[in-house]
Length: 423
Image (cartoon, rainbow, N blue to C red; front, top):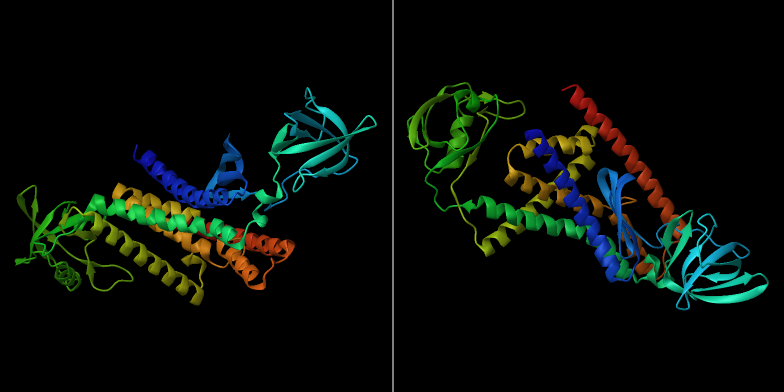
């Protein structure tokens, strides 16, 4: 049952941070009038799919990412050339469906050879039907059917490239922006669930106890209140308590604790931990808290968002200065760490999800080809020079960048798996 809960937590975390990111792209693209063909969670083969209005919503096999595919970004429609035989289904004077093959054998469809076709600007088709020429106007939401698969046409004004630089930039930036907003809201939920430290605390409580560490061996439990250490009252001075423990490496300490209002005497011997100075006992200390008001929650959410962003940027700076594959974590390590956090309770999981959301937002804003940050750079260049960069060149940059990111992800995942195998 515990494993099922952890799996559910991990799934919900990935789904939430990815869905919110892609929803930002989707919503602001729609607001700009761009046709969003697909809203996908995950990559690879489709597992589940349904269509709502103009957009196909899909869940794909690999849940580590997603995309909002906008009209005009990729080659997407079957090319129809003059002389090609097609069929058109007309309703109320407008072409509603265009059939590029006769495999479906549709009823009430007019077949003929294409004389002229424009599905972007004039929205018209001229057909030669048994020697006679017929002109048809095309519905802006007409469907092209090829081998029983329908794809909606995208007139010029519904394509990504037809929008202003500002509209396109907002549609791209909205994804990372939504990740920051999500993190802010999740931090707010965390503050409401855990409260804020009281002023002038009178006691310190034991939070999480690490299995196998001195505190666990001595019998400390989550929720214990530390009364005295070596006969000295602790009160609410957390820094002093940590200092006493640090200076008592390998020295037995007499702790008096309160558990369910009953005094208990325990002997705790701090031990050294590799990479850290002094003695450690393996507990997370918790100060008494009170409920947070609205303004306090808003302030704390902003503080957590800012401090987490600062921490991530600091980590990126260190990676650039001293690159090591061991400092990078892919999906495997993220799942591993999320599993550990999930065991600590829903509050810690909410805090962790907020951190992952900020991480995703910042990562996508980096000016790396194939990421949102790179696309924003190209839009900035377009705004300065007054015309866009050749689409084929920009597409090649993004393709190379995506290939490099994919190879890096394979290397990181391989390294993570080796690390797990080797312990």
